[in-house]
Every structure is written in structure tokens, then in C-alpha cells.
Amino acid sequence: MSYVIVDASVSLKWALNDGEHVAQAVALRDAAVRERRFEMLAPSLWVYEIANGLIVAARRGRIDVATGERALRLLLALGVRLVDPAPVETYRETERFGITAYDAAYLALARALDAPLWTGDRRFYQAVQGDPLVRWIGEFV
Image (cartoon, rainbow, N blue to C red; front, side, top):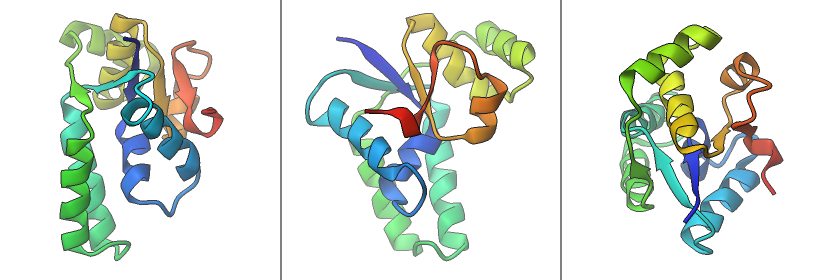
């Protein structure tokens, strides 16, 4: 089984379907969940990032709180396997690219498994642009 790393920015598109590249994010999810082409993985902080993204969406009136809780339950049920990278490798990626340790955890995991990391976070993508493991969700086919 091959792996892909999904970050919270991609995963939140599955629940908050009002942003850009939702169709590509859903296609990625379906390729993993329905077609079983690969397994989706993320560091354990993914759980808290998606929970935070949903509550922020509720506070901004994009969804109501109950919808956010249902979305969280559905996202957790998709089977994204949580695997934490080595903290020192996360630290190294943080320093190398000048990114947050949170973003670096996804990259360190991708590097440890030699797996593509799909993101919809433009600032992160631009900071690590050129890294062969990092992919822009808008380009998923």
C-alpha cells in the first residue's frame, strides 16, 4: 500500500466545501477511501488542526456549531492514520524552510515515508516550493 500525507488545509475542504480546489480535495479523499489507491496519513496534530478549523468556521458563521461537530466526527471516521514523525526531523524541517513546527511535522512525516504531501495552504506551499514531496491540491488529478 502506498501512502499520501494530507494536511488539515486539504482535509477541511472535505467539510467546508466553499473554498477553492474542493473538487480536487474530494477526489483525493475518494481515491483513498473508495478506490483504496493509497492510505492517507497525518501527524496526530491533524486532529486538533481540523477541530480548530471547524470551530473557527463556526465562529465566523460559515457553519453552525452542530454542523462543525458532525463534520469533525465524519472527518475522524475517514480513517486518516495518525503517525508522528521524529521531533528532531520536524525541528530540522522547521529550520530548513523557516516554517512552523506544525507545518514541518507534515513535511517530516512525508520525508520519513517518502510519500507525497498534499496541501492547500498557499503560504506553506510557497515556503517549501521546489521540494519534490510537496504537492498543491489544485493539481490533484
